[in-house]
Amino acid sequence: MLIANYGLFWKRKKVFWGRQGVSGKLLGTLATNLKDGQVDFREQQGIYVLYDDNFRMVYAGQTGAKDNQRLFIRLKQHERDALADRWTRFSWFGIRSVNKDGTLRAEKSTAHPAISGVLDHIEAILIAAAEPPHNRQGGRFGEKVEQYLQFSDPETPDNDEMLSQLWEHFRLGRSNAGE
Image (cartoon, one colour):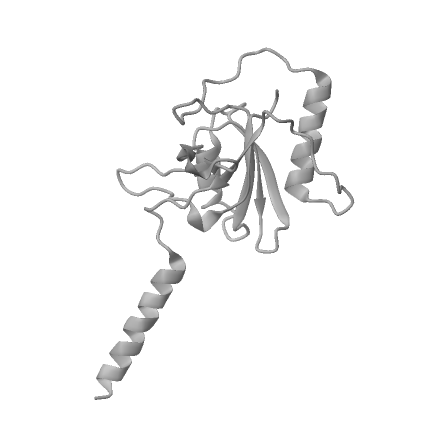
């Protein structure tokens, strides 16, 4: 197997990027069993894709191979680089599987998967990431590859709720000022 798990179209604003003295997290939950708990994919290795508001692909990259930077670090770099204002969602395709305790397994060994499996996974990554309209059958990851849905970290502020509170504060402040 080349790909062990993946997450599609996760929202940038739902990621807890960390703060002074507290590391950020990249939490997901297994799509087939939402009660399984959360997995932190910050140390995942693989391929990732950044998208704009219209789900248009704006960047594709890899993580954990050449420079040893993992998924979270690469995404956090894009929070501050020339792409910072261009992406709102991301997808990732990871090579490290998840242990029963919810941690990522050690890095893959040097064993090489069969070429047919590699090609199926490359095709599946491209279809999942780009969603071409004429690929109706979808990609062939296989039964062992697990999809994870994004988990909203409780430490991540809900921007909609925050805006509502600010608006209410502003509205009440203005009405009190007129009295």
